Length: 80
Image (cartoon, rainbow, N blue to C red; front, side):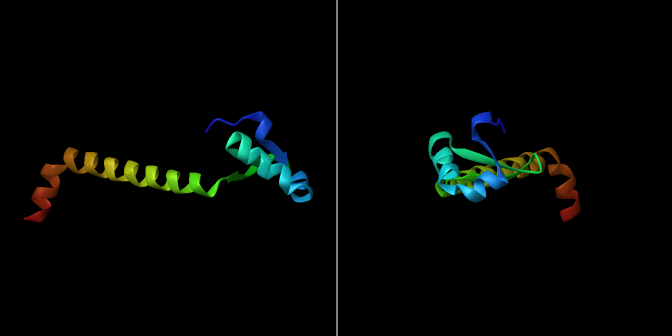
């Protein structure tokens, strides 16, 4: 994940000015919240979460199919 340095806020700033964090998400697509100068939280739009979940499921299914094709002979032997 590439991080835009403009989207980084401290947890103190996020706590005191959440509307700024929401604006960052609207403008940049995500906000990174630092806790003790370490990235701790990512805030994204809810619709983007659904898109990410769908992409992840598709990636898992594709990986599973590749794995099954690669090891088909072993699975057929186990099925006997």
